[in-house]
Length: 123
Image (tube, rainbow, N blue to C red; front, side, top):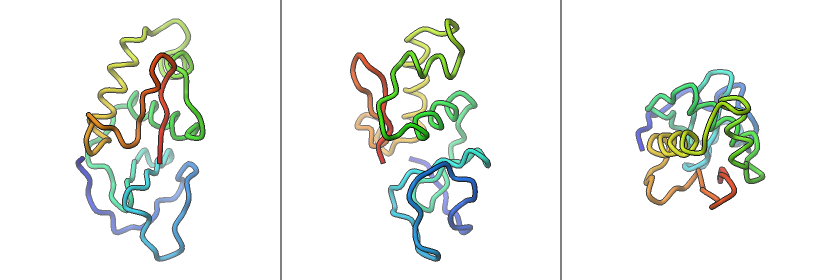
């Protein structure tokens, strides 16, 4: 996974997630999505590979709903609008996101597929 070090500490505007005590580095594998700055962090490292608008939208939706499984219908409608997508479009988008986000896309750490249902973000 391509990441770069960030000397700025925790970004402002992060959507949810546990925060480390002031001055302490976040856990090295903690995923954080900053929807204000359109940035993704894993630990203190900023994700180097820029996500497309749709990839970021998918990740932000999963991140905002990380306590549950997001159904495919819900995700497709949220990204493309009701009736404007098909399951193959979502599958390809998830695949591209995993390629950019996961340390090992073949054994995903963050984006998990729930067969016949949808996807879940794990922290």
